[in-house]
Each structure stands twice: as C-alpha cells, then as structure tokens.
Image (tube, rainbow, N blue to C red; front, side, top):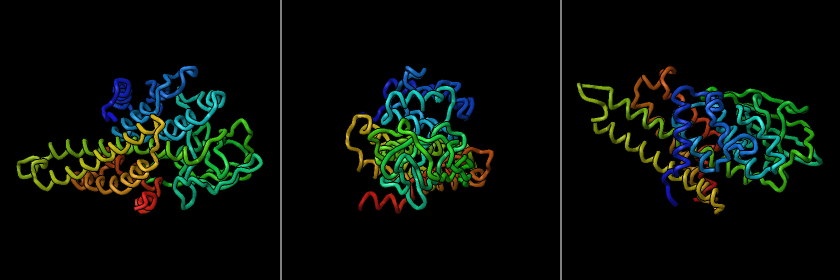
Length: 334
C-alpha cells in the first residue's frame, strides 16, 4: 500500500487545517464544510470515502481539538454509510452537514467494544446499559450495538435514560440505560453485526489518535527548540533529543498502523489482525509518550491555557474507551 496522502486526502487535510487554525469547534467544522464531506451528495455532502474521513479525524487530532467530530463522523456517519440502507441514511444523516450530532453506544460496564454485547434486542425492544457514550444528550441519533442487532435510537425516545459521567478532557460523556425501549423495524440496520461497527470505530479512533500524538510531538519539538537553558536550546541536549526520538517512533508506528487499517477496510480486505495491533499499540504506547511530552514541557505542560493538556487528556479517554493495554494485548493473542 501507499502511505502517502492522495490528492483528495491532501485537499481534505488543507480544508480541515484552514478551519482549525481559526476555531477548534464542531460548529466551525460544520460551517467550513468539513462535517458535510462524508455525507452523500444527494444529502448535500461531498460523498468522500473512508480514507478521507480518517484524514479529517487525523487533522482534528493534530490540532488538539476536542469536538463532536469523532462521535459524529467516526462512530455515526462511517458505520451508517457502511451498514444502513439509502432510506435509513437519508433520515439519520439529514442534519450532519449543518452540524447535527450523531454518536454510538458501543461499550458496556467492564467491556470495551464487545462483539457480543450484553444489551439485548428482542421483539422490537432494547434493554441494557451502555457506558462511555460521547455527546449522547446532544445527539440526534445513537447507533447501538446489541446481542442480535445494530439499531439506531433517538436519545429522546421513551425509556432512554442518560447520566453524565466524567472524562479526562472535559468532553460530554454519558452512561445510557435502555429500559425496554421500542425500536421500529425501520430503525434496525439489516444484517449489521456489532463486530463490523467495532472495526470501523477502532479504525476511526486510530486515525484521531494518530493526529493527537503527531500534534503533541510537533508542539513539544517546537517548545524545546525555543526554550533555552544555560544559553542553549533544550533540543540540543542529548537526553531531550533521545526522549523526543522515542515519541517520534511511537508516532510513526501509530501512523502506519492506523493507515494500514483504514486502507484494508476501504479495500474490503481482512483487517482483523491489523486492528488488534493498532488497538494494542495505541493503548500501550500513546499514554507514555504523552507523559514524555508533558515532562519535556516542564511546568508549562500543566498550564490549562496551553494546549498540551488537550492532547494528553484525550489520549487517556481514548485508551479507556479501548479497554486499556492489558485488554488489547489479550486480543492480540500473544
């Protein structure tokens, strides 16, 4: 495979960068046309593919933006384009181009991205608990993986209960309880499997994390190049250079793993082993290299008016979403 960005991906990256340089919000992404990129042309979008959506999320991560982009594009739009009928897409994606929010309820208490969820769907009724559901209250629709189906539910439906839960980066996240929620047949994604939704979600998490680590590396490299001690830039000290090299290695491997996964999924190839490697490498390597970036910033890294905390805190939330390094290592099977 070719790891270089295509002309289309470069154009997408330029658009996202131009927006993020002005404003790091989901509204800005919608106003700048970024939210519409993956929406089908018949709904007023550009109809770009999986690789381009991955590029969007990578660039959002590179700028340390904490927005609804991952939930809406990565967990909502991408699975719906892959699994929903045209009629379902027309309903569920109708508001995205103008800044509407989508999300997905994938994790359960003590279970990260389970392919066999404990949440039940029987007789047209949905019951169970999901955790770590980003932006659930603001969402127009929530994609839910259950034991026998993948369904789409409005958070305002009778029987849906939302409880706000804390996050490291301060973003909105909820525990969602489905108490015998009635789901019409038109909101059930025919022949969709939770495993496929989880694959796509992990790929999009990888793209976002790729940008976060790369952005933190760039931020740190610039800082130590301009910060002086004993009359010399910190970057000229051997220990500092060695630590930056460690961050660079982790950043490049996450980048390659994320791109390999998205390429295989886009080409319809088997990506199971690549996804397992991506999940483990992200959960095991991204947090410690973020610690290195914090360390190299000294006290500046703890300043909430400085962007470093956004990168690190978001990586911590993504690692939790994936179940942590030990869980991901079990899935790799080594």
